Image 1 (tube, rainbow, N blue to C red):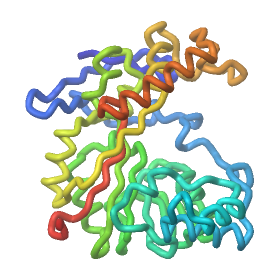
Image 2: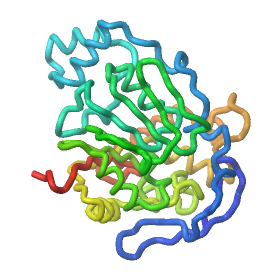
Image 3: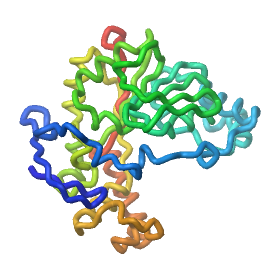
Image 4: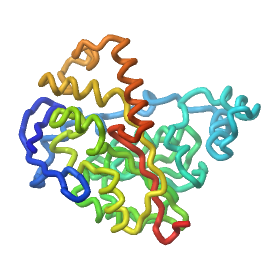
Length: 315
C-alpha cells in the first residue's frame, strides 16, 4: 500500500506492506535521514517549559498522590476521599493502574523515546522521584527540577536497572522492534515491568479509513503492530504480555476525517481546531467519544497499552 505524509501536509509517498502471518504493517524501505519529518514543531519535541505543564504540588498533595498510587484504596474509602481532596492538581495517569504489581513512587522509572519528558513530569508531580528519560532526537539533554533528567541517547546506550520501562507511542518509531525490546529487557530489574502504548493496525479505524487512518502517520511510524505481532516480538525478546488495555479516543475519527479531506493535521493556524476544520459539532464529538469507548470495550480500538514482564518471571 502507498501512504502519504499528512501530519505536515508534505504529501510525500511511501510504500508499506502487511505481513501475511501477523498483520503487522511496516515501511518497505527505511529512510536514511528522517530529519525532514521531525521538524521543531513535531509535538513530542516541542519545547516545554516546566512551569507551564503543571503547578508543583505541595508536600501534603504529594503524600496524597502516594496514597492513591501505592495503596490502591477503594472508591468507598474515606481515606481515598481525603487524599483526592488534598490531591487536586494533575490526575494520576490511568495507565499507572494497569500493572499487577503496584508501581511505588520510589521505584526506578525509565521512559524510552520520551521527547521533552511530559509523561515523566506528570509522574514527578504525582510524587515519583527516580525518573529518567532517553531520546536520541531531542536537541539536547534536559534537566528539570525534581530530579527529572532527559538524556539525548538511545536505549542501547542506557545503563542501569529499572523497575518500570515505558514507551508511550515510541515503539512504532523504532527501526528494529525485536532488538529494541531485547535492550529494554536487559534494563529490567528483577520483578520489573514494561509498558508499551502503540497504535494497532488491526483496529476498526485502520480497516475503515484505510490509507487515511490518522495513525498510519507515514513515514514516522515504521511498524504498525497488531496484537499477534506484539506477541511474536515480545516472545523473541524474552518478554511476556500479561495485560492489554485498549485506550483509543475520538481522535481516530477526527484525525482520519481530516486526512480523508486531504487536509494536514498541522495547518499553521492554531486558532482553528481540528474539529472546526471538519465541521465537527459538539454532539458529533460526543458520538465519536461513545463510539471510541465501544470499540475499546470490544478490543477494536485503534491503540492499546501492553503490559509485559520477563518471560522467566512468568507465573
